[in-house]
Length: 389
Image 1 (spheres, rainbow, N blue to C red):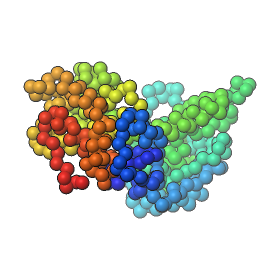
Image 2: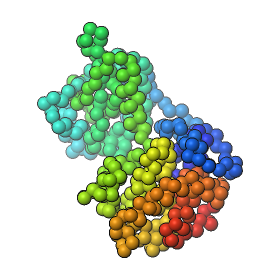
Image 3: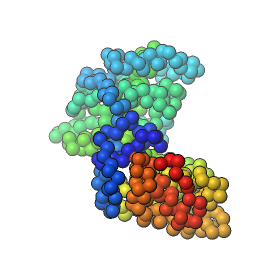
Image 4: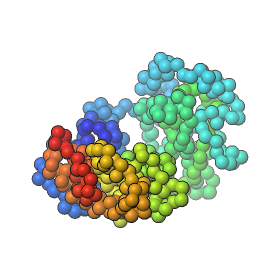
């Protein structure tokens, strides 16, 4: 984690790259001791949100008429980046040669299971849906940049992973509105148009694939918007848990986690053992609020990393604990016991971290406190954090 992650009274950041300063003023008199789960949850009731750099307001462009980015001057830095860093010419040639052809969408999007029933829409029509919006939508330059240049940016040759979702309103007479609105993907549409403009491709008639929804009320429409936004603001704990599943450990249920023939925790690679240990701990807190579980996951993984960093013996012990190897761990029962201990003692670990490391933010002090308690419980070497105070 980053080096500036505060204990907040109103909002908790678990991001790998925390903002330059907390969104709210920090008050930690070091006399407050968490004594209950309810008190812990009170400090984490505000959802994690995307934040801009401290002191610099996020710039945005109100797209009231069209998602055509031509008139958006705030996207000029992105245009400059496209011009200053030449795209892979082989990929660019492929895009140009596919323009106007039936297979064009597959150069930017993943193939669907049933292409015969796939809905296509031209970029010109998608851009025009801005005229039909029920409320002002905004185009954020940083999100357009992420679609183009992020880890799987389309300007780097990757394909869009998420659908562009269109929504139609069903009128009182049962007919659908003539024009839909975009409920998910306006930044993806803008990024595609911007990329095609850069490549000199007439973009208005280029077709791409969309998913479709129909709603019959404003409340249903709002649900689509809110749920789509929430999916893009998934907490770091949940993101890492999904990543763990993608790397071969079944986290769909506790039963699968321990007993899946091919993807149980026993098969966890060494580099995902911290996340696997955290997932085991989280299963032991399934009856707790999600905010508690998220904290438990992050702090358990942090404590695991701090213990394996102490010595080779600690590293081998902790990995064998997770993978069920070694004379004492061959049935994974030891992992369950350790995970239960972590879940039961999270509050004590947070309090210990505050006591021993009064100048550290909670996301740093709590994993240390948990590592100390867990080391004593497991009988391994206790980390020495003297210099880190």
